[in-house]
Length: 363
Image 1: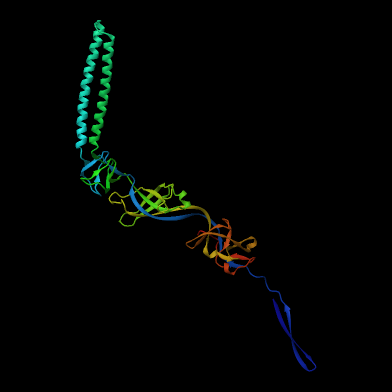
Image 2 (image 1 turned 120 degrees about the horizontal axis):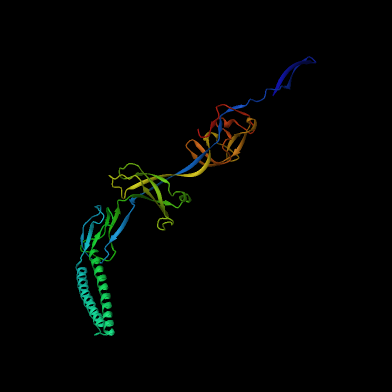
């Protein structure tokens, strides 16, 4: 700093005033009081929200094992049923006739086997008394063997005919609810043609369709918070149990299933729309308040308090912005001190002093 000093002289009757500038030293610039913040590490995560539907954990499309004309459909869509309950019937007339034929064939095979056995016994007895021949005995035994084979075939045919008659009744494989009905009385259906769609009561799962994101590899086993959209039901929790290995070619999305752990029993949830929220860990980041972020050379920076409490400008990499916070993926380390409030007054090498109790970045 300089100071001016005025002095007066007289030359040839003329007064002159001459200003003399003299350099006068001033005291050193004082350290600037700013907010000190200690950089803290924080586990970061990403919240994913998906919309899907609630479906039965066990579901099946059911049809008759035999082809025929439907005579009865005993349940409608939405009806509840128990395991083993008869759900429908087809006309058993032809199959009952086949059963009658099989029963008659079995009776004939049993009679033929009994006669062949008696003949074999007589041939053996005559050979033992010396009045018969080995050839006659062997022929009787061969006839008996053929009769036994025919008897076994007849029994097998009868068993098959009985099962065919039993299969004219469509029985529920488990307890549940009917979700769709495609068969009507009088309709002729083929074997295994779907007539009913059933959903079991063994559990419920949420099914979501999501874009094919790399982060899906980390979703398996993640808890999901569930809330219904179109019906009133308490909040539920689930766990991701399945991620489709292939992208659906029709929608370009991936199917994700989450089994519901606490579905209420007094609310019909099947088919209800549901929103799912899950939090995925994305690693570790350095957290600072947004007030510590500044700009320099066209890139985000922070002021680092270094040796002798002098500051330096350092570039940082921003992971994402949070509520009142900035998460950094590079540029600073945990434990370093950055400047918060007051950073707009700084320049490189400026000496600073803490104007606060040193705070951590995640307070």
